[in-house]
Image (tube, rainbow, N blue to C red; front, side, top):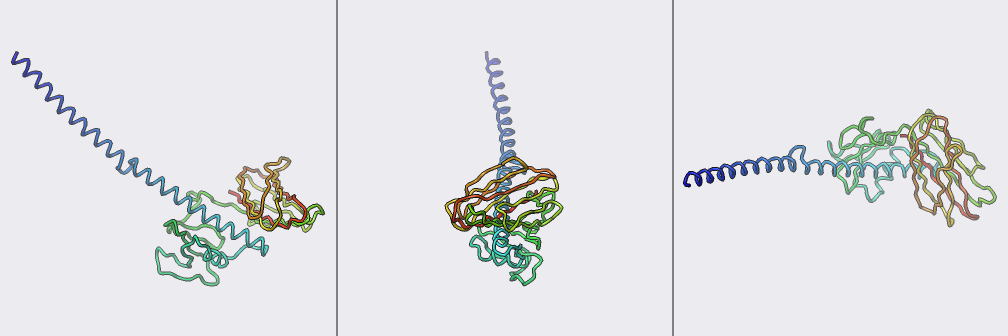
Length: 272
């Protein structure tokens, strides 16, 4: 009986030791998965960082696009890098705009003919470099290449349709392509539409922004013979649509609406 009890106590101690060892191993694995180099917490932190960076990048790109559309609507030409820097300086969401990186040097004002400017949003810790093509060139000193640039632009179109007393057909349109190997544009002094010819296969982002007065104006987006979308836009409204197009396709954007409306529709199409 004593021997049996002794054996039982031995088995219990061995089981306890094994259990403790297993718990230590499980705890080590759990800690590694949680806070290790490739742990869940680090992955979550990295994912949040990438999301914030992408959000900040989209905000800066939108501000550049809006400045381009406004310049084309008012002056029928693209803004210079100097003019863009002035627009960004007046934006309440922008922390600074300089000609030299704040990461590597002291603050410098923007000269008359900069080749690059550096800017940062107040709510995000990323410094963006914008080159003289009005495109993002780097983020926090890291150059944006084709491999890591999510929104690499092949070319873009800036256009405008100006409309008034549409029942009498009073309208005009014009457009400009940054690269005639990807887009060409057709408008006219008596046209209530703008035609964009697609010369290469690509994805496009179509953006419309309204200015002026009138209860509403209807905008129709057509690709070849098919109507993609019809939108009723009010003043100061914004619209965007993504589409895959092929060489030979034709995008037609047409304005129609109510009598007495005096409106300008800024049109931006980005090839990606």
